[in-house]
Image (tube, rainbow, N blue to C red; front, side, top):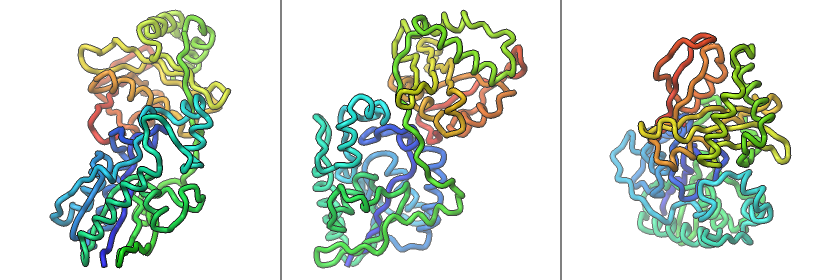
Length: 373
């Protein structure tokens, strides 16, 4: 008999940005690092003889938690990877739902029917992952092993183990670092428990809730000048409590330059048809020094306080990563503590400060390659 702990990877960028992760190899988040610590403590005294993982970074970092208190070789397998979503890799859910609603409905709720040119089917994932897990089980007879994989991949494995169709609504997507305990004997997997996240209790995480997915569209600041000015004025007022020294025309002219250089730098956000916010990126500032610049990240009042800002931030970070920048910078005012807390929560650190018209301004930076979203 083989004893298997099947574990989903820790929280990574796509989980918080509401983006398709697939084979895209993004960073682990700050919360993800805490989840890894909790997982390591859970398994501190659990005897393990072998360790396997998907070869994607978020899975391998999670698997490293199980080596913290014991010397184990980490064996990586391509067949334990997440579903490859081809042209959807690193795309945002809301954009895909708006562009191809029927296809995203199949992906989310009718898995057996999902087909996208250039992507894997759920059936293909199920076949490769099930074959890999069975090989691991057979090769480790009489031993205890841990296997780290991904949400869709584990769901495909559970459909085989529980003999349920992938469209069965009772078939779970395991939580980040969720543990499923299995036994394998005489060619049959028997579950002991599924998706146990009790090791995360000490983190006092808020109850999971589904936040709206925000889609984005490029917006020409000159054609939508009144909208751009109104957004920037509201952001200025929220930060400083007054519109004194607010120079709408200067900011509008700068945004127009950004847009002419690259239409993907000025984006308007929507919840369905309802306007929700604005993102303005400067594609040239810092280019030679290797960093990108966020000029404006704005949510309207109706969409604040819901955890939606990270979806705008995610688009900014992915834009500059794709351009080969090493970091992303912005300025935040000392008298805007909510903004400072938001950026620091998502991996920005203060580099320096200067005295502006309204007091201290902090130069803040996010560096790619550091697991700290």
